[in-house]
Image (cartoon, rainbow, N blue to C red; front, top):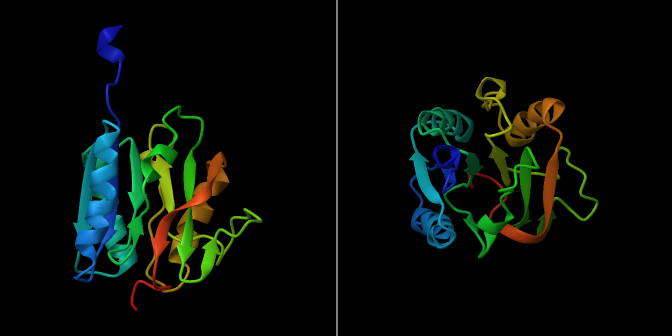
Length: 177
């Protein structure tokens, strides 16, 4: 049926921000490429709380927009070219982890093990496979809130793709630096 065919994919990128000058670069890295692939793209900057609180607010906005995919990007980070091609438009995966250059580190490293300190906020959530009510909240307990969020999701949604190449760049190691 023609009425049931979706012509584009809504990709929402949540960007918690503390007002850095690099926010424009983060926006540009999301929008410029995703539009090239015919997707509907929204960047949601959220300010006023911790990174975790701001991500939780962004998730609520993404839900209201009926996002197909949610990605996260800190305001001093950026996506590399072709990042949006890594999203699983076939709906085979629940989560896509975009390999990240974090300072001098590769995250996840080539063991591809998803564990504390071997993954950051460099993941995309397939909301066509993940139920909104199953999304945990990000906590504000400092270091590792990204992992704790992802760890809870992996218990119910274990189908994960990890990209071979680097598509997420985090020049600094922490949101508060």
